[in-house]
Amino acid sequence: MKLAILDDWLDCALSSCDWSQLGANVQIDVFHDTVRGDPLIARLQPYDIICMMRERTPITAALMDKLPNLKGIVTSGMRNAALDIDAAKARSIMVSGTSSPGHATSELAFSLITMQARQLFASATSMRNGGWQTHLGRDLRGTKLGILGLGRLGEQLAHYAKAFGMNVQAWSQNLTVERCNEVGVSYVDRSTLFKTSDFISIHLKLSDRIRHLVAAKELAMMKPEAYLVNTSRAPIIDMQALTNALATGQIAGAAIDVYDLEPVPPDDPLRATPNLLMTPHIGYVTRETMEIFYGETLEAVEAMIAGQPIRNL
Image (spheres, rainbow, N blue to C red):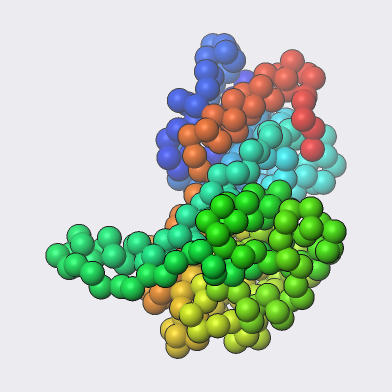
């Protein structure tokens, strides 16, 4: 039995749980880089089970057709846009997931809001380069946070923001006044959220109807001193419109953790965009989350080997 663990960018898979439980008859290979096309096919052809990290290497129907030994796939989380689950089922490939605590992403979103409010990255960079006070920050207390999407992660962010004295408002296409009352935030319409928020944070599930939900029109509504945060999915924002807005000073800044192509190429022009704080898709990348992801991946692999898969997708 051969097992491949993909996209272990931080080399933490083997230390996150006790893989020796699988026994000596299971060969475990860990890959720390991400490849695509023919190199990916060549890499994965020997393996019986593939362990994925969500939203990293895409596992498509076309790829599955070129992996004759593939019997099972385990993904972190119970949803993975990079995995064609229906194609796997059609090919009698077992597919399992893991639980996902999620709060790490909300914590990052709030951290990015704080960093922008107080200009922490710019100030720290100035200190490292020999400077002193160079950027004037602002209070969070009394500012208005607009949340796009008030599901589990949006609700968590709302609680963090209220603890800091922020006024929180929310909108999404299916959001109700009752749900906002339940969380203790104000319901507003879409244009009001963009026009009146000092900070906007995105917490929506990607679908065709919200692709480029934040585009030139929405960015033009925002205050010139407002900030945008995206720890959700890259295509929700029209990135060309965002880079234009940042380059012209239409909004004060943005912080993003998700990208159309990951890892972002070293020479990608996006890296040079002014007033853009970029983090390398670390929303769920914490020690505690990885212990859950890999620990439950190990459980799922054991169940597949035993012929009794768990947490089926």
